[in-house]
Length: 89
Image (tube, rainbow, N blue to C red; front, top):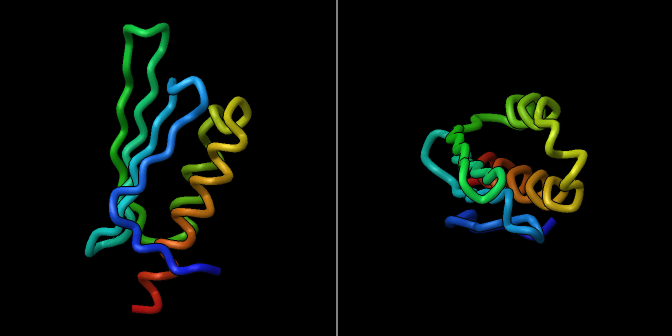
């Protein structure tokens, strides 16, 4: 797997309704999730994942993964790569 630098990687859905920013921090991987509903309501979540188990548990609970499968596949690969890079540094 290619090493990822994990410096503020931005991912978004094709319709731009769901966006993620992923970056490595000293304590793990910082993920910001921002979802816009109907153009006016925005919900933002900010999390720090210290290990792959915590991230995958959170990921499994997000129902948006069914609507944005490609985006969530990219997100999972990116966060896994960042966590793996943290273990090897």
